[in-house]
Amino acid sequence: MRSRVIPPTNGRQATHGKVIWLTNLPEPLKTWLILPMKNWITLGLPNLRPGDMKFVDVNHDGKIDVNDAVRSNKSGVPNFNYGMTINLQYKSFDLSILLQGASGALLQWGTESGDIGNYTKYNYDHRWSLDNPSSTDPRLANRGNTYYTGGNYGVNTYYLYSKNYIRLKNLELGYNMSSALTKKIGLSKFRIYVNGLNLLTWSKYNFFDPESTNGSNQYYPQSRVINTGFRVTF
Image (cartoon, rainbow, N blue to C red; front, side, top):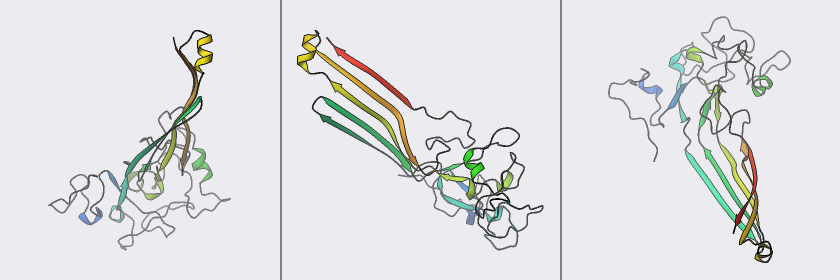
């Protein structure tokens, strides 16, 4: 069962103070009030430059402000978490596989890039420039020096990325030596194995960990680990 927002009795949201039509109830908890980005003419914003982000004038009042924000229907919490285990055995070999995944969550992504640090390769490749006059990607920003990377306009649909993924979380392949051989070397059982953690991930985007909740890229991604060993029973 999922938690949902309950309409307030005073006609406004207690947390954000937005008019009730902005809530688009009922929606999941922890969703965002976002400005929809679209290839439309930007209204009501001064000092525009080529490559600036364009927003939708939702209420058709001739300007872009907080009243054009709409409630997203997704949050950083997945709608579904799922997993699957597979155990196979053939003669002396055994194989175990753990797959896990999630769907329905978004990550609000916004790194402090520019003077303070490097841009991600994804943002560098997906940017407006004179050589790439994109109608979907804006020009790069130096930290929060643009209206669409900070303030009331920083929370917009462009910076919400899908966290849907499937991950090969664990895989282990083992071999059990036959009892005839183990008896010759004075053992009851002998098993050798190799396993790996976080081996493969299938997701739409590869520049952040879909299991992360940190959108500023200030986190240590999960490591890919490969182990090998043996188990002896006397």
